[in-house]
Image 1 (spheres, rainbow, N blue to C red):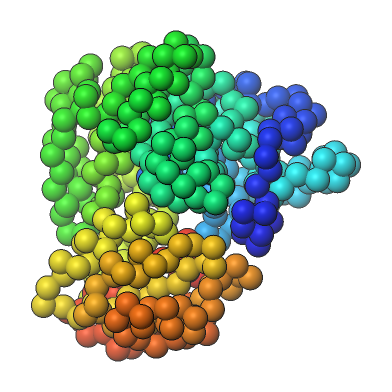
Image 2 (image 1 turned 90 degrees about the horizontal axis):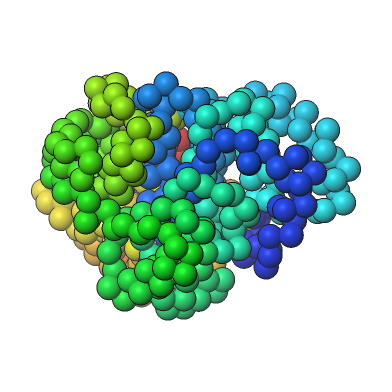
Length: 412
């Protein structure tokens, strides 16, 4: 299992997934696909894209990873998980080929997703890349649109230790004559994407060049958006999505919407507004800047690398007149020094470790954090740390839970 092994579960080629899907009859070729890669935001952008398509009455498959509570979160159709029977039947029916190929957990769940979407006869599927792009198991699809949200330093041991190297791996999802949208302009890697797109004769646009938007967060939960997009014109809406980093994700999704509108895949913007207002429920969106309490404010978020966490850290550092309680844990293979150095020094810390072999022991995390003048207590489990934070916080305080998807999963 990837969650158990980490990098060791990554395969250096696409042989397993190609064989597995060939055995299944290449189900991924039976519906239209939007393929989404990037370091941060790709899960949110994938959910937003699924919501946009769902609003128009399409049946939409959504493949994302990892999961929080249930592996069926990885393949949803119109926001709903499959039955457990589908998973059992799939494994029983294809057991011989699975034992023969010996795919990784991720390869198996990707094949399962493709098969489930075909079985459900979806019109569209939004497929989120797991890791990288070029060698990711999802990269056997032929999409109608490729999307790359942004690039920052993560999984450097696998993808390279410079932004251009990582961008080159992510650019591996750009296909021949297939439009590509880049979510964020980053001068250091601009040429990587444009050269790749030119090589494949793929039309390329940057979200900021076709979308202008203003964002206003309301009551921690909703964001009011006023936008103008190239083909849509003015489009104002309220979405139950908030957080210090969501403006980039919404801008990228508005660029995707503009593409879908231009191609007459989306036509009814009033229906879309209604769907966006209930976005979280519509697509079963959890674990990302999720409000779990109001007095005290409790926010859980899954950002786990410096690119994603710097937005969170900046937000937390600006909280005034409230005591800040941070429940935090990491996996062992995460580079933590840069993150710990930037975390607010005046918060109370609750160091925790999730229930998985890759989790960094909380006492080790506490020791590392102390070197960065972060003061707190180590707890053996996530729940113990979370309960302690809730017990110590006053109604006017702020509790943040994060550092790892696995930490967040245990309190949802």
